[in-house]
Length: 167
Image (cartoon, rainbow, N blue to C red):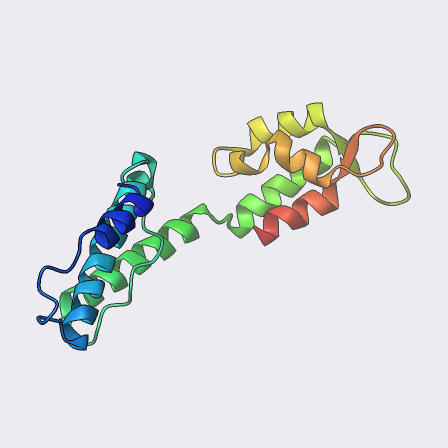
């Protein structure tokens, strides 16, 4: 519907009853009704154009109120399960010692000062021998993060070990 045509038709039709003028409140109500109608048509037309927005997940869930006991218990239990899973992923002291021993055993010469270095091939060998828990740390992405300006394409064993301990 074209706005110009609507206005022209409205102006072209004479008031049938000039004595029956609408009150100011009625005019405002009519204007508001028309505005809401046209706005909802306009807004509704844009909303349905893209179905992709229905698949976007919700990112925020409000905290349960004090009277919602079941939701609070569910939140506490899910947090406890999450923390247990994260603690199982952490390396214990024995695994860290084993990792340090493997890294030291597979270091690549020549040493720069006192710092032991390891190349990518030995890095992957250590990753295979270290076990399943350590597998997440032996990726090309991690190696590339720690790779600096070494002319032999190696990373520092100490920097890698500190990276593993921080994660």
